Amino acid sequence: LPAPSNISSWWNFGSLLGICLMVQILTGLFLAMHYTSDTTTAFSSVTHICRDVNYGWLVRYMHANGASMFFICLFLHVGRGMYYGSYTFLETWNIGVILLFTVMATAFMGYVLPWGQMSFWGATVITNLLSAIPYIGTTLVEWIWGGFSVDKATLTRFFAFHFILPFIITALVIVHLLFLHETGSNNPTGLNSDADKIPFHPYYTIKDILGILIMILLLMTLVLFFPDLLGDPDNYTPANPLNTPPHIKPEWYFLFAYAILRSIPNKLGGVLALILSILILALLPFLHTSKQRT
Image (cartoon, one colour):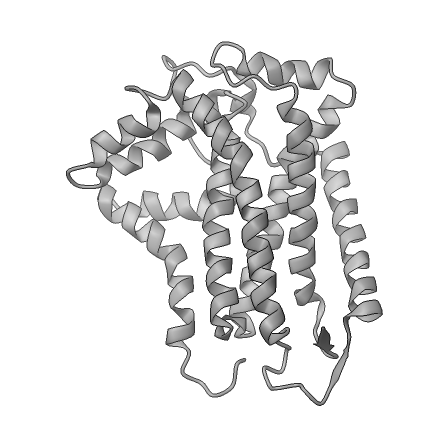
């Protein structure tokens, strides 16, 4: 597929996200071989992976920090789309918004699996938000929990969903790319660039490879030198339903959502504002009034 000759490095994040997804699925698969989704053994199975499994520590930290790289690339990819008006490709954009929701759901459920203090209390706080839904809220929360609190049933189903969702994400990514191939890439000028196209290979394959190498360098620097930089120390304490940590806060990539929830005193209002803060992306194409894209 011919590509515009002037697309900048901001167009690299799509391929980087593809690599992130592959890294996460691969490391996740190896973690799943040793993980047990049972409240009594989940925490110790993660300890076992880190201490006893050959290079288990490496796989575990690549997976945990890989999620952070995923979100860095994701936010930049979405930001690029907003700034350069890529949302005028309706289908590609809407699949992208669905992908954003799915990745966030997957990341949230993954954070619960190690069954540390933040895992348990994070799951408790977030699932409880659904109780704000009128009439069916409480029933819905108990249905998701599979009981009357976050417990064995919750952990098992979160593991099942966390395992299956990345494959659904992969399918959605393929659809995302199929729609992109219908239109071709947008470019920084926002103007039709039919007169100025170059072949994707070798020009953008080599550019993508360079981007991927830089990202892997950053990820491995994080993994090998600062593995706990982005994590919460409380998650090294096994989950204890009788002891609430003083500060329950999510991973950095959910802090925007946390801030929205905290800033609105009403529970339902907070939940609605949170959902709308992401759903507003789907409205962008309809709010675009300019004749130019950028």
